[in-house]
Image (cartoon, rainbow, N blue to C red; front, side, top):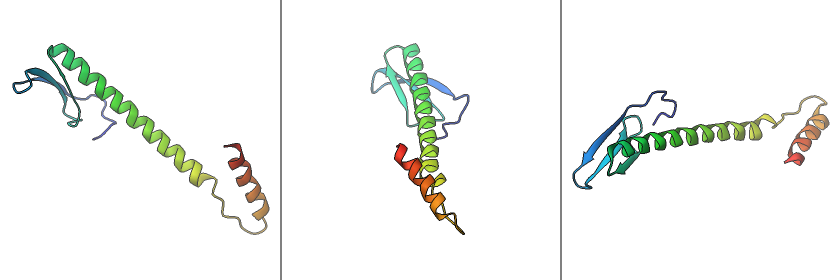
Length: 96
């Protein structure tokens, strides 16, 4: 789902089959938190959503960094700059 949701909607519901409360988030239906105490179920789902959003943000930053690493320094040398471009590219990859 959308990890950029600023104010997610949380709810706590009783699960008769599990005999516990279930904390849910409308924007992240794949996540849930179960507990015998409704306040703990709510706190749990809020924490889980927060972690999920943070991990999604970190993954997106990693993805952006990966694009820069792979594409930003891929040079297409033209008209006499071949040696300069190769040396810049080699310098960048020798640091990693």
